[in-house]
Length: 155
Image (cartoon, rainbow, N blue to C red; front, side):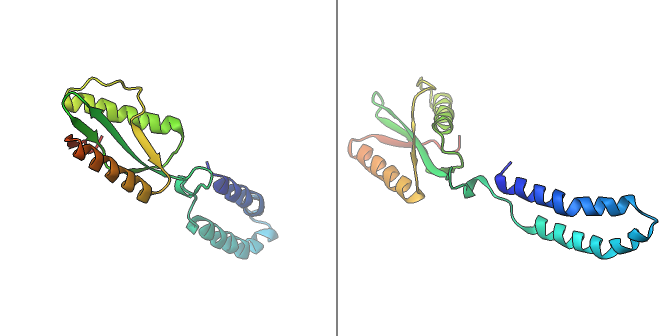
């Protein structure tokens, strides 16, 4: 749960829900006639609270999303298996290594390779532009060495 959601829940519970519940418990007394404007105010406040967009992982300044692409070179057959840059919402090294493991399993299954799953095959960049530039530079360098570029696609 994000901090923003918790703050909204606390404020809604503390300042809005308690008076409303107190008025519901005293139904039938003279206090219930005052619940009309309060209930309307509560309804408007809850609608405004629900209309405000919640914070996503992409909005977290401590954990910005990264652009990631993966590659495995095979010297024997002179092939470079490479993925397209994609956005990864979590930037921890563990998330990048997990993404690299998926990439290695995909290359092993689709192309009959036997690469280790635990290798560090993915490269994370702070912006999509930097990822695209590094991706293009690697493809150009490997093409100059007469490597066949194999796009892995979705994995």
